[in-house]
Structures are given as C-alpha cells and as structure tokens.
Amino acid sequence: MYDNNMTGESLSCQLRSRRRQLGLSLAEIARRAGTSAPTLSRYENGWDRFEVGTLRKLADALDAELLIELRPRKITRLARTHRSRAIRRLARLFWDHQLTESDFSIYPVWIVERVLEYGDLDDLRTVRRLFGSGGFIDAVARARFASPKTRNFWDQILKLEGRSCTRKFSRSAVWIC
Amino acid sequence: MYDNNMTGESLSCQLRSRRRQLGLSLAEIARRAGTSAPTLSRYENGWDRFEVGTLRKLADALDAELLIELRPRKITRLARTHRSRAIRRLARLFWDHQLTESDFSIYPVWIVERVLEYGDLDDLRTVRRLFGSGGFIDAVARARFASPKTRNFWDQILKLEGRSCTRKFSRSAVWIC
DNA sequence: CATGTTATTATCATACATGATAACTCTGCG
DNA sequence: CGCAGAGTTATCATGTATGATAATAACATG
Image 1 (cartoon, rainbow over the protein chains, first blue to last red):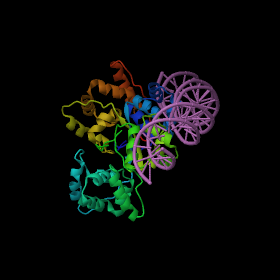
Image 2 (cartoon, protein in one colour; image 1 turned 120 degrees about the vertical axis):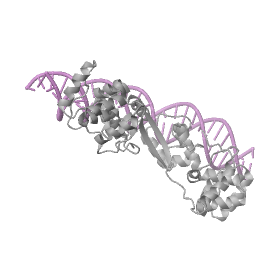
Image 3 (cartoon, each protein chain N blue to C red; image 1 turned 90 degrees about the vertical axis):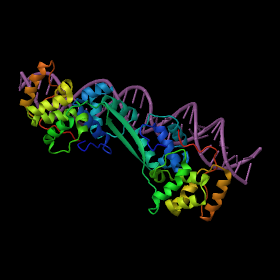
Image 4 (cartoon, each protein chain N blue to C red; image 1 turned 180 degrees about the horizontal axis):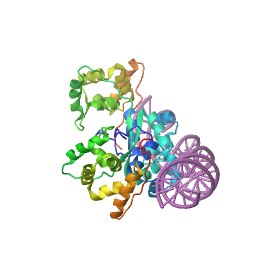
C-alpha cells in the first residue's frame, strides 16, 4: 500500500489495509458487511478461500470496488523483424476493430481465423512469419472456419504437418457474450 | 474484449471469451480444471456466485492469471487552490515514502496521522485547508495517535467540535500486513 | 439418414464457507 | 487495579457452491 500498488497482494492483506486506511474497527466493518468481528479477523489473518459474494459485501463495507479479472498469462511470442509493418498490413482485415499489437499476442486464434477467411496469400505469409511456423500451425489447428471449403483446404495442409483441424466450419464464430 | 479491456465484465463473459480465444471446447477446459463440461457451461451462462478457489482453478486451466483487487471507491475531495504547493510542503513529513497526490485522496487518515505527529501549526493549517474542515475533523477522529499527549490535545479540540477521538494512542500504528 | 461433437439444463449428494457464539488475550485509561 | 474496547481462536449449525450424472438440443459430417 505504500507503493500504491495492491495488485497481487493477498486478499487478507488487502482487507486489513483498507480497513486501517479507513481507521475503523473490525466490529464496525463487520457490522456494515453483515458479518461478525471474529469472522472478519479470520479473513484478515490468512484466510483465502472466499466466496465472491462475501468479497463483494466486504468491498462495499470498505468503500471499495471489487475487481476480478482473468488476465491472459500465455502471451504468444511474435517475430521481431518487420513487426509493426506486418501488423499495419494486416489491419485492413480487421475493419470492424481497432487492432493493436497486443491483440496478436493475446488472441492468436482470432487473428488467424480472420486472416484465413479474408486474407490473401501474402497475408498468410505475413502472419505465419509473425507467429512462427509452429505457432501459426497451432492456431490454425484450433481455428473455427467460416466455410467448409476453407476448413477442408487447411485440413489438407495440416495433414502434411502431421496434424489436423480440431474445429469445424461454423456459421457464427461469435466471440462476445 | 474487442476493446482489450475486460475489467468490469462479468465473470461469465470473461470465462467464455478466454476459452474461445484459446479455441478449446468446454470439455477440454473442464478436464484441465478438474470440473465437468455442464458445470463450466453453467459458469459461462450467467453464474456469478463463485468460490475464489474455483476461479483459481479455472484461470489456471485457461492459461490466465486471476487478479482480485479491492480498489478504494471513496476518494476524498481535495481543495483545488494551492493543491500542489500544499502537497509539496507536506512531503517532507513523509521522508520514508514517495508521496503522491493520490495518497491524499485515498489515505486521508494516514496523512493526518503523520501530520499530527510530526507537523507544525502551519502544516496543520495546510492539511486542514486541503481536506476541508469537515474532512479534516473526520480523519482526526479516526486517527491513531503516536503519543498520549497528542491524543489528549486533539480530544480536547474535537470536543469543541462536538465529537471525540474514536481511537487511542498506539505504540505501533502498523499499516502493512 | 446415422453418428459424433459440442453445448445446455436439471437434479442430487457432498464438502465446506459462512456467521453466531463463547472464551480468551492484549492494550489503554481512570 | 478494574473495566472497556479491540482483536484472536475455536466450535458448531446452516445454506449453498460444486461436480457427477442424465437428458436433451443443435450442429456438422460422411
């Protein structure tokens, strides 16, 4: 907290720190949260198996916002050479999105799906160079295809690489909830 | 996810988006997480009462990092005039910390505790002007004092304001876990 | 068309998070 | 010193998250 950076700190630490920032007692926060001081003491002293609902109540009692995020851990490595030029070239295939470089690292399957469906041969070469041969093949194997023809085509290519498409053609490859 | 900003999105949405980014089936992620596809489907379709342990398992299975953070919501309003000059003046009292303006908003009790103990009369006037009269008195009422004398002094002042110190003198006002 | 894959919904048994309560310790104050 | 406030640890009953399982629907393929 002295670093103004609480990310990664245990929940117990966060709960205690925030309560002390407010200068309030266990009993007061417990009252606000609809729990008990002994329970809150347990939470502040190392407990880590919370229900999210409990954390929500506690956050409210502590005048704080509960943020829960799944942050992608495995970032795909991109080739270094001509990276920004390659990405600029491919950007036209994503006319409906503001494409950033991190999209390539974080969403390789999505990128490859789009390029497979709308890109030309040079686009394919470009994205293959960006992801590397193995990374590219891996993403293709997992991609959903927008037409049976595309899928069949790539299935043949993948067979030459000793593996096949794991996904089918799909009419709606919807990514949002 | 098209905005590359998943903060604030429901957990269901985050789980589904991440799985689709990876191009994997419910069954595969469920296998990795040690759960079942019907359970995972339930989680992706609006369930929101998770245990943190469950989220941890799912994050691992999705090659993602689970971040849980309590972010202070109530930010104390600071007076606008002479703000940065006032903060610069008070910075010498925080010799052991790199003080930022947001510290004043987020940790008013801590700031006031430090000023009460080490500051002079002008410092007190400065911090009172920054927080406003009510905000200042509120923080004082909640502060832990480092000596009985300080506490007694301020208890008298607070009584003139119609309230009293809610905390005692304490030898160790430790803020970290 | 039959078959396989993927996803969804419902039901149920079990483990456990939660809060209430009791007992205890520590600190500060009059 | 006695008392009050704050915090800690243990115990227990209750509600519910979780995963297993069954059934069903939708979609794609040969």
